[in-house]
Amino acid sequence: MANDAILEVRDLRTSFFTDKMEVKAVDGVTFDVPKGKTIGIVGESGSGKSITSLSILRLIGNPGKVKDGEVLFKGENLLDKSEAQMRKIRGNEISMIFQEPMTSLNPTFTVGKQIGESYRIHQNLSKKESVARSIEMLKLVGIPSPEKRVHQYPFELSGGMRQRVMIAMALACNPELLIADEPTTALDVTIQAQILELIRDLQTRLGMSVIMITHDLGVVAETCDHVAVMYGGQVVEFATVDELFNNPRHPYTVGLMQSLPRHDVDVEGDLSIIKGSVPAPGEMPSGCRFAPRCPFASDICQELPALETDEDGNQIRCWIYSEKWDGDPEVNVQRDQ
Image (cartoon, rainbow, N blue to C red; front, side, top):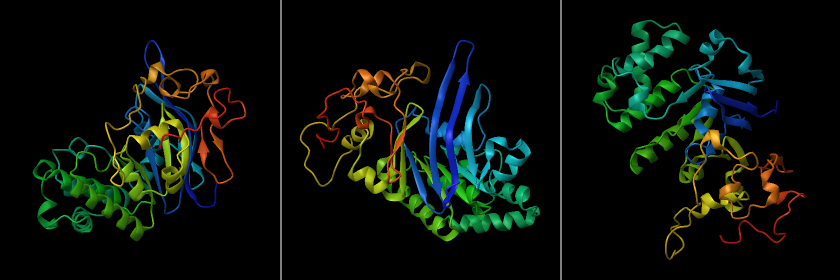
């Protein structure tokens, strides 16, 4: 285990099974999360981001299954743990902010009862003590009148408040690792900025590590130290946030960057787009997953490239950077930036 890594994901593979086929939703994902740092996982919808996070916490239910790989948390493989052991870890040492708080929160329980569940399960606090601690957490995440809100139901709160309740639930037991799955989805830009600032502030205070799952590269630039770009259930590029934005290498990453509107450059006409769409998980090509949409695809792309690591620890999964590349020898995936 790397000295500074609190989590190591190694060759993680998760599939969903039907009567007719196996659908490989996560196919050989590998990355590290250093202590106290934030790793961003980005990609279009259907790239496997959320399934990766659910696999880490062993929350994949039938017809899905984590088939292979390792998820090393503080040196111990979570995939070898019993369900009872995982219940002690979830919400205590590793917590998760789920997408869509209106559907993730139980509408039949007050927010105080839902936050307090973590205290009752993991810290054996009484009902009175758990309510008091829940009020403290609501105050910590910036909810006004926490003594009143703790007795309210999710439908009585705004979208921004519900998101803060989800964060309060996730941070109740001071976890060492927080997985934030699209924590600012459907929020306006002002509330989004407040939520991101809140997560950064709490991360500094608690010294926790964060996995930030998003499709918003602006969020990545603002919050992350390293970034894993996913496509078709695989990591296609892994780099520091500065390296990724200043020197994107994979054609998919370059396409994502070129599709961003820029405030410092006058752009004439429409923004650049990545043609086509992410294939359905059961219809992935056997070679490079991105080849059908890649403007530089060559014959060798019918084979699946390996995820190569350079001397700086950055990773790339693309034949263009291989000695086996049989396409245009002068190709430069950044030439149109």
